[in-house]
Image (tube, rainbow, N blue to C red; front, side, top):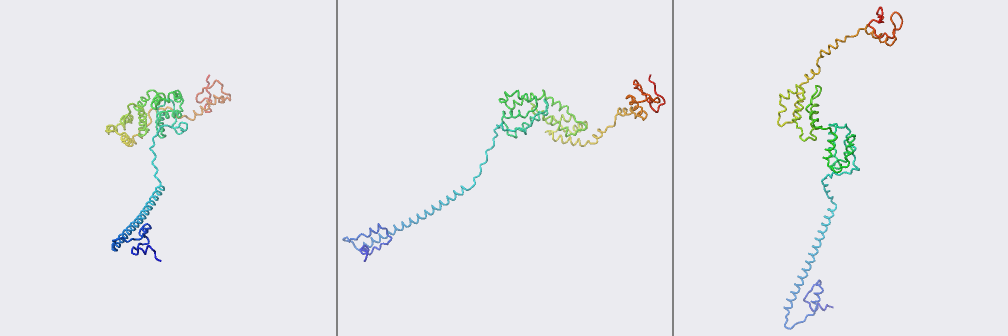
Length: 362
């Protein structure tokens, strides 16, 4: 049997893949209208087939494009997932620590002062006290202590000198309200003698180099005095002032060399250069220094030696007998009788076996 639809329209040749809607439309029985020719029917069928072909091609292209778009989207999503995974696994750089800004506050209950400088020197001693204050400043700087109250509180545990500690204890009521500079003014006024800066300046002016002292040792003493004076001086001493004080205390030979070479006239003045040059001058005078140390004995010492001639054997024996007689252990020569108690003073030869008779002191 033949399909009635195909028999009714044998010339349409509709493909089997035609959509159902379209096949139903073309399966409707044809009706021969009056005045319609076969050529017209053939042209219309060809146009219909072309339209169907275009629709099918468009649908196929849409399906292919959609598949391509889905593959591209899947590929893009896979790449995004890989990128996210790599970012999550990559070690993030550690941000740099913020710049340390010392607050100056410390936990006084946990802070240890065992390695801090201790003040235990005599009261009113200038050099030990100033060196201790310098050590305090370095200690606070290395420990990061900048707050005034913390500094003052820590100082109390570093004082072991009795008078200074008693002064600190008497100021406990105001120590929490004053600054570090004010506290230093108070303790400087108590722990140091009056006019201590004047004393240091006088020591610099009276500086003198001994004959047995090296120049560098002598110069170091001058540097120390200048640093102590400049610690809290309203008008610090300059290096030229130090060189002038050092040159005034030099021996005459070195002083002449310093003046002749004009070492104090250099502008700008550098004390290190001055010290090195004068040290070379000092090394150039070893023979003079040795001769100065080996001076011949004076006339007074030689006279003292001549006034004390060596003791003879006879006088030595006599002195031994005198000692024995003073102890009442001696005997008068030739009698066998002990020496009377009132006889203590004898001349050489008395009671001496070498003498022929004793001396009667009555």
